[in-house]
Amino acid sequence: MSNSIADLTSAHHGPSAAIAAARARFSSLRGDFVFLDAPGGTQTPDEVAEAVAQVYRESSGNTGAPYATSRRLEVLVDEARAASARFLGCTFDEVIFGANMTSLNFTLSRTLGRQLNPGDEIVVTRLDHDANVAPWLDLAADRDLRVRHADVHSDTSLDLADLERHLGPRTKVVAFPWAANSTGTIVDARAICDLAHQAGALAWVDAVQYAAHEPMDVTSIGADVVTCSAYKFCGPHLGIAFGRRELLESWRPYKARPVSFEPVGHRFETGTLPYELLGGLLATYAYLDSLGGMAELAAWERQLGERMLAGFPAGTQLYGLPTMAGRVPTFLINFPGVPSARLSEELADRGFGVWSHGSYYALGLHERIGWGEALRIGLAHYNTLEEMDRFNEVLAALVASYAPDATPDVVSGGQR
Ligand SMILES: Cc1ncc(COP(=O)(O)O)c(C=O)c1O
Image 1 (spheres, protein in one colour):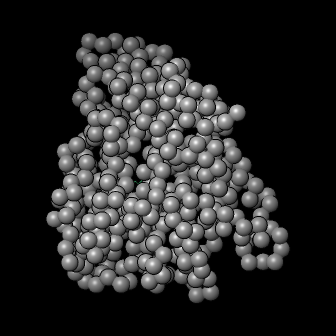
Image 2: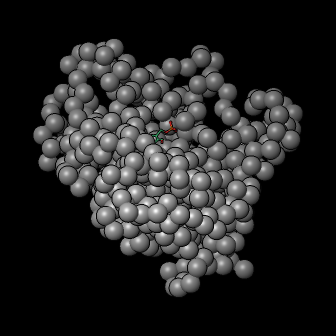
Image 3: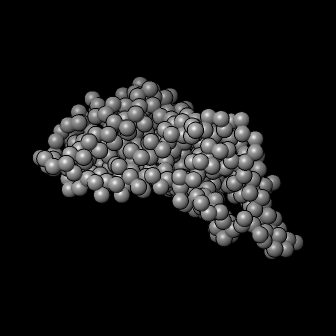
């Protein structure tokens, strides 16, 4: 039996057999709890955990020794690099592994910074997570650079005209998110890479949120650097970056001197790699492929997103785009007069995992849109249509319980 979810688009009632089969591969999804916190971190299938354990059992020590368990590690690193290249749409040697996206971004921006000069400029956007802003602010402070902030429209889409206004002869980098972790807004990555290159700057893409929901081809968008994080797409806590080969070759890496310069991505990997997590990463890609790959998952997630959007209770204040067009299924919402922190706690008590937070690390957008604190609902492919309905039903009852004449037991029995 195929596990592919291609047939899901025709599913009318409840979770399809394919999603039920996928869910059965996660111990954490066996209970009633509904995880709607994917942008914070997804659930992980058991086969990923098993692959991590298998590395500990069967491949030990370090690469470079002439015995079997060391050789296995070398094969594993090569396989993880090759599979990551397929996932990103680049070549084997352009892949860089790191502790997480933030660490990779600090490392790579510092490396580029070695060749920047006082007065050079970096453009970031108000849509960015701070992991794609703070490294540039720190670098600017250290090397006397200037960081400029491109604005968004009131619907949270990126203001390309404003971005263009910030470009100039001193622009060296345009850093932007492929999709926003706060509101789910997708950015036209190809268009911004083109704008960056026309200005003679590098295009530096934070794909953490996008990689979790859409297939990527970093070469076809023309990016110079792209970063993502495996724990957002059912994998281990591990950062993965793409760097265009000619660019990486032109940089002077921060590295221990005996470390090999080849493949080129490796020279930016400081110290020993987390081999066990690379084993888990391979299992993650195999899991996603077994469901038909990211394009099929994206189609299913759009259905889930449409169902969630259509079912939001009356009075929902949605920050961001109103339909699934131009977004991933990450929704930021509020209800006037209802504290989102209380809602998040009460939803947790009733079996739903959603976050309440202020900025969600998107400091520029938070300042611009001013949502205060809001509820973030983030879907993953393992969610079901039934979960969307159940969530909205309980949310509506909870929100109604805040009305002055409501009785508190209106939401009792929310957890099923
Ligand atoms: C859009 C975005 N960028 C960057 C990061 C930072 O990723 P990491 O936790 O791997 O450092 C996150 C984490 O939530 C994110 O959502």
